[in-house]
Length: 300
Image 1: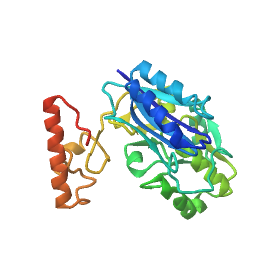
Image 2: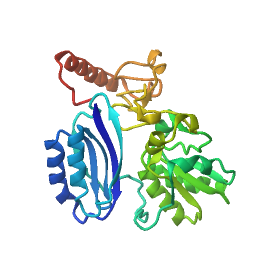
Image 3: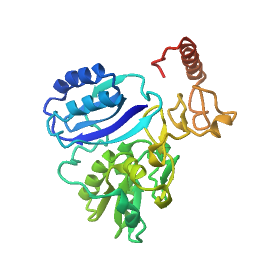
Image 4: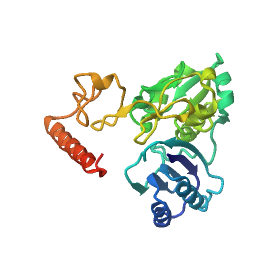
C-alpha cells in the first residue's frame, strides 16, 4: 500500500524558485511521486509514496517559510497512483485569476466535518460546490448548487451572474481538499457577502470522518491521480479516466459504443479530429506494449 498525501499552505514565499531544487531532491531521494506546485502565495499538491518517504517529504515542507503548521489529508492506494514526480513553479497554487484575492487576509468560517450536515440542512443556507463540472458529475452533497464551471477561473463570473439568486442567504462552500474554498470565500467576502462558511479539510476530510450512514454525500469524490475517485472511508472508487479528455468514466460508460480505451468516451466523442484520434490510438498502443514489457509508459 502507498500513502497519498494531499496538502496546501498559503504563505509568502519570496523566492519559490530557490525552494524547488531542495524539495525535488528530498522527494525524489525518498521515492515520492506526484505533483507539487510552488508560487509566491504558497504550496499545493498531492504526493504518494511509502510511509517513510511521505514522512520525510512532509518534514522538509514543514521547514519552508510559514509551513510549520502545514495540514494535510492522507489516504491509501493499492498501486502507485502517479507516474513521476513534478515540482513546478506557478503564478498561483490554485488558479482563480483574481489578483486582489488573498486568503491570508481573510477567509470564511471553517466548519468541521461533524458539524457540516447541520449547517447545510438549514433553510437560510445555500450550499455551493466550487469544483469543476466533471468533478461534480460523479458526486456532490445533496441539494448543492453546481456552478457548471469548466475551470476555477470561471467561478467569479458565475458568481456575478448568479449572486442575485442567493440574496439574504448564508453561503456554505466546499471543494476536494479545501484550497479552492480559501480563495472562493475570500472572493465572496470582497463581494460583500456577510456570512460565508466552508468545509474544513474539504470533501476528503468529510469522507474520512463522517460515517456513511450519517452522510449527505452522494456518489464518489474525484481525485487528481490514477485512482480517479474515492468513497466513504477514502477507499478507492470504481471510476476510470478517459485518457483522451481526462474526464472520469463509470463502468457503464465503458460498455458504450462511444468508448475506446485511450481514444474516446461518451463525453468527448465529438470533441477531437480524426488526426487526434490517430495520435491517441498510437499512444494507447505504446501503453499496451509497455504493459507487456512490464514497464511504465510515462505518456499516460
